[in-house]
Length: 462
Image (cartoon, rainbow, N blue to C red; front, side):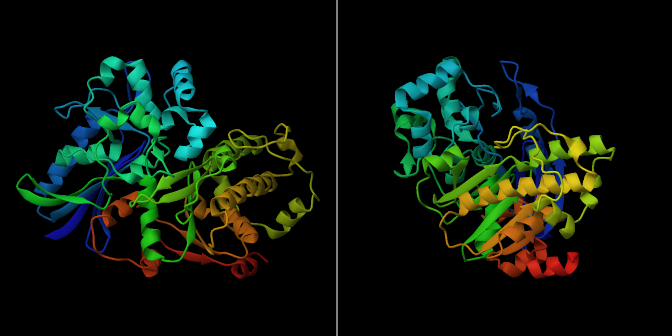
């Protein structure tokens, strides 16, 4: 019978379940997708009841499977979400969607009481994001839906609620609190004054570290149970454990997030205005993050290119970096042009005119030059004056040859590594419950870690 660690990895789109062996190798995986339901206001929300049923069913099936002996279970989920439970541990409200519109009147009342948006953002290292600031969800509930708020005994961050389903013990953890919640005062290292003034602290459970575990008898088996961890913090853990020297991680996907776990200074107003925020490590130390909606912009713009040039979506993935074309574009030997931004901070007024490009390849190179220019600015904001010499790149853009080569051509004084792992935050959640230490060799073997050097790029591309 194989000894395994079970991980529930709850994303916004897919709900995944993994089993890892004692060497962190994936030995089983399944996932499910649930149709959204509507909350009481008619806005889409995750179907919490269906997710709970799936979690309990899957776990029961694995416990009955004679091929595996489950020794531990942990939970990684997306952030900015609370489950509100009553004295009996039952949810009293839907799992509100963090994209749900926020009441202007209630938001204004908050800032009238506690200071300007920029002041609160600076103290809590959380840009003003309305429902994405999970603390503001609690304030909204108190004043918009007092009949629900008054039933709440505990408000649990989503990772800790999934853990609560197994342990029955309500807790909070630093990684969830640090997820742009507007709850935490990073200078005080405590909840912000507004949390105490509104008596929100009375419904927030005790804070414990995400590497805490609870031994629990579950269906007759003693299992080590984790308290859950925010997925972005979990994804950073393998790198933190494998590399003891300062580094930056660019985690790419729909969002490109540059994570600097070595920057402990309070964020400046400029940082906040440029979409920087702090996450937290499992010990409560800050992680400076600079966000960029890069993957979303990339997808929209590539769709436009494919439509204009009559190419099927996916054609762009075959295009490799063309050094000669790159220099022609940089030297303005071709018609100079800027893409009109959809969701990124651009200042030029031009409208998108794809007819200025001779072909898809040229237009795609120009698009990538402009996107990487924004990526470079985001990375530099995250690094600041931290003595970092290494940059790890994982996620979707780790496969984009043009993105990588343009990035390397800018960061010539840094060592860049690409990493590919389908496990993401699930592996970090598993590591929380193990004493096994990993090293860079582990990343190389399991993350397909590759060093990116300018010499190789030149040799490859001429």
